[in-house]
Structure formats: structure tokens, C-alpha cells
Amino acid sequence: TYVVTENCIKCKFQDCVEVCPVDCFYEGENFLVINPDECIDCGVCEPECPAEAIFPDSDDRATGWLEINRDFSEQWPNITRKGDPLADADDWKDKPGKKDLLSD
Ligand code: SF4
Ligand code: F3S
Image (tube, rainbow, N blue to C red):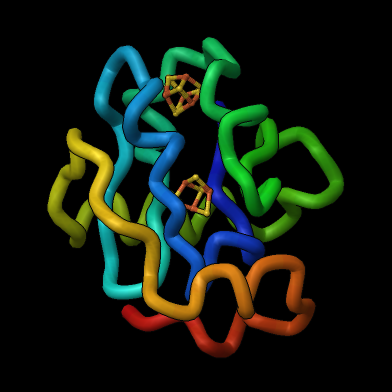
């Protein structure tokens, strides 16, 4: 499966939503997650994310994010249409240390 990681937090560009063939993204206040059981591993979303937040769960940069994606995908609503990025998305893009800012 692919997973969404820290770089998405406070950006939420949503280009990933537009391309997913199985609509397996779920939306929180300032972050999106992938439902690992629904993702078909097509990889199409990975290069679309302007924040480079999406990785295969086997990637080192995805360490610890599989459970977060699984847990929140069971709580948050499904998102199938791209909305606007968060207001300060460009300012938060590429900022390190955002993990504690994830709103649940
Ligand atoms: Fe959707 Fe494919 Fe990305 Fe999985 S890898 S979330 S199926 S676009
Ligand atoms: Fe987040 Fe990137 Fe999608 S910032 S909402 S994972 S396009």
C-alpha cells in the first residue's frame, strides 16, 4: 500500500484525490490518509503530490505512518473530489517537524 506522511500536514493540496482510481483517500482537518485495505498499489498518486508526502509503506520515509493511515481512514469521511488546498499550504510546504500539528 501507499501511505500519506508528514509533508501533507497543513498543506492538503489534494491532487492525490483527483487521480486515485479507487477513491481510497479520507479527509481530516489538515491531513489526508489512505485506507491501506482499499489502496490497489497503483502508484499514480505518488508523483502528483506537490509536497511529496506519499510513499509506499515499505519506504524508510513512511516508517510509522501505516498505522496512522489505517486508524484515521476508519474515522474520517471519504473524499472523492479535490477541494482547495489549505490557506497557508505554500508556506507550510517542505517545513520539517509538522507531525505534532496533525489535527485528529
Ligand atoms: Fe489510490 Fe493508487 Fe495512490 Fe493507492 S497508490 S492511494 S490506489 S492512487
Ligand atoms: Fe496531502 Fe499531497 Fe494529497 S499534500 S492532500 S498527500 S496531494
